Length: 383
Image 1 (cartoon, one colour):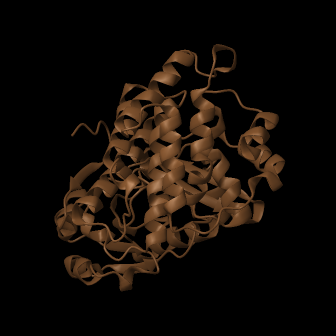
Image 2 (tube, rainbow, N blue to C red):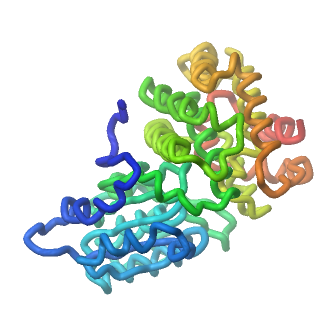
Image 3 (cartoon, rainbow, N blue to C red):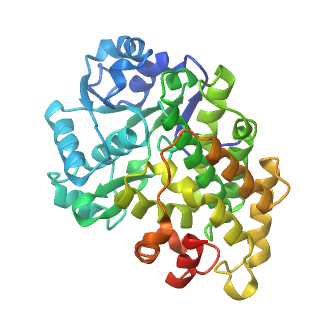
């Protein structure tokens, strides 16, 4: 499969047991056993595969750190300080997007000046340079693509803002896509992960920054999920688990090239205001944004290549998803949401003006192929 640039990637059920070999491969000094920090989520001990993974890492006697909740400047700073105290040489991140983002951010910053919450927030203003610690990433939820992206999401809750740490040192050195690591994933997390994948796939395809690689990867992500969109996906069979994990990885590679757009810009205030999970927050507006961008015309097109290019990109995703056109694509998303085991979405019309203003403050909105302003977004949110 054509994956284009990205980390070394191993795909297949049971591949997680090779993590020790991958740790040795990325270590700077291969003459001795490297010092390893294992970053996990709070639910790690309860997953059926956790003991096997710990056994694989036992030769390194890793220190284990738990990342609970969303990464914040304070939690990333704490983790970076722990990396220094342990004199870690390799970071192994096992979990969902929050775990991997926290581990990636801390590893990228740990080799620089003393890391404080203020420094973390400041680093998000410019691309990170230099050389961080190598990260071996094993996603245990599908959808985020964090195991392949050169950026990490950090939440400044006090200021009510989503931050992004970006740069080559943030991208993991190795990604291990083991479908068995999805065993034990709760239905709500699985559904949210699928929505995140769907949003990333189509957003990367229509982004003003998209190229042929991003369009191909975005459509391929949807193709992996075509059958799962129309039937219950929990508990997923072995083949479904692999498709879910690969779809998330493909969409992650796509947004590493083209970035995300309006769905993600809208999702950040929805998460901060209503506490929606990231994937759910993206999915709430996905069908509306598909219809909105599919109606782009020359006079309101933000892509220099023209409205035709945007419509062609959306049509390619629709074809990959087995939908006839953009309207059918949006309809499949709405049908999936209607069946999904997710909390009831809030009435967005209530806070439409505030959501619109917040969304336009994120650079993701600037990647959208159709021009945006507050009145336009209010109409979209209240439709």
